[in-house]
Figure 1 (cartoon, rainbow, N blue to C red):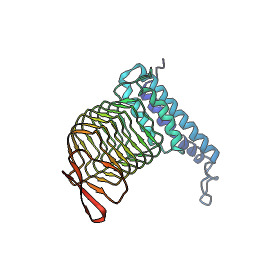
Figure 2 (cartoon, rainbow, N blue to C red):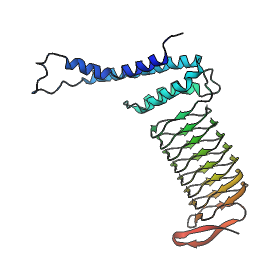
Figure 3 (cartoon, helix red, strand yellow):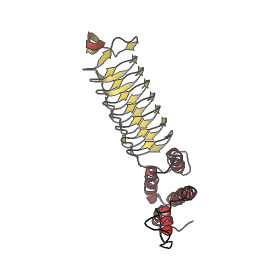
Figure 4 (cartoon, rainbow, N blue to C red):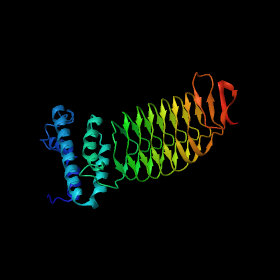
Length: 312
């Protein structure tokens, strides 16, 4: 087993990151007559710069892999190692999708319960980033925070297990957001999130409250057979496409106050401790089919062909 400490590994990452600077310093130390005020500094040849970048990337990945091997043997190092890998998502390399794919390759074996290298109880924090091809299907983590993240490709979280706090507040899913059968142990926050493609939440379970306040669902939204153990809030949420809550079970309150439904809506067999559609609006000029929970129906049309949902 390697005796290199994590601190030495982190030092290696920092040292390698100075490769380009070192090369430029060597160029600077050439005889003074070469660099005169009348001549600009000699640029780094493209092939040299590309090689230095490749070498630095390879060295960083090797250092992280070495750190992970030590963390396999020492649980006290595991969260620190995860944090170091996540920090590298902010590196400004050319071709971010390829770089992120390498980082996920290092990280994912430690997040899959079926993996021999699984590390239980890890936290993820990836705020204010553009993430490509996120695939956490079947993973298990504790706390997960994706504030103001733009998911550039499909975001796959099917059957993922979150045992702690989860937040996607202010994030944008540019393609499909697939959370089918995911489990949120203590709830989740999707306030102000934007779902451009399919929002797949069929079969999700949540042990705590969930918030989708002011979220925007632009396409198909599927909460079929979802099971919520606490309050769920969709206050001021916009549903533009086909919206399915068929067979959903809300153990407490289901709050759709001031929500807007522009397309199909199906609440067939949905149950709740109490539905609240106070101030919710329904577009009436669209040729759609809607099934509301018992006791609720659209009222008289208002300007621009919208009507409020009212109690019967």
